[in-house]
Amino acid sequence: MLQLLLLPEVLGGNLRKKVVSLGTAQSGQDSYQFIDGAPLEGNNFYRIAGNDLDGKLTYSPVKLVRFDASGLTIALSPVPTYTHSVQLTTSTAADDEPVAACLISPIGQVLKLYTIRQGQNLLELGGFAKGVYFLKVSTMKNKSEVRKIVIQ
Image (cartoon, rainbow, N blue to C red; front, side, top):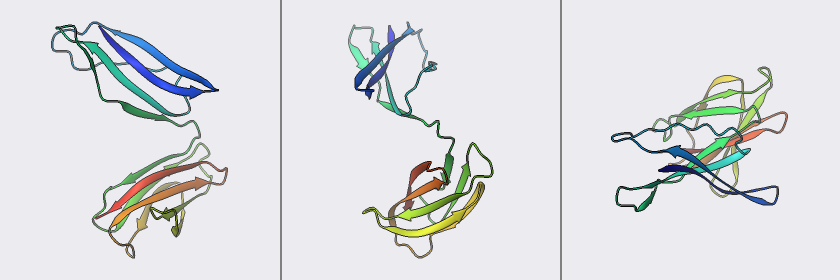
C-alpha cells in the first residue's frame, strides 16, 4: 500500500498533516499522480511511504512544492551562469504591472538594481566575482520572489 504524506505544517496555529492513499503499486509501476486540492500558500512538503514486499516501511525523499497565488511568476536561466549574464522571465497577474529586481550578496547587501519589464530580460553580471548571489524580483503591489544565482 502506498500513501502520500503531506508533512506537518503550521496552519493558523494548528498542525496540518494529511495522509492520502495512492493504492497498491503494480509490479514495475514507477509513477503516481496526486493533485492536492487545497495546498497551503507557500511551501508544501510531500513524501511517499510504501510497504515493501518484506513488510518494511520505506519513505521517498521529501519534495518541496511551492504554491504562490500572488500572481508573480519568475524564471531564471542559466543557473549557474558561466557567461556573467542570466535570462530573467517575469509575468504577473496584471500584464502591465512594472517590476524591479535587485542583486543581493549572501550577507544581504544590495549590489545592483535592475529596472525590468514583463517578459524576457537579460541581466548583466559582469562586475561580480564568482560566487552565490540572490535576485529579488518585486512588483509595485509588494509581491516578491527570490531566486539564487551562481556565477561560475
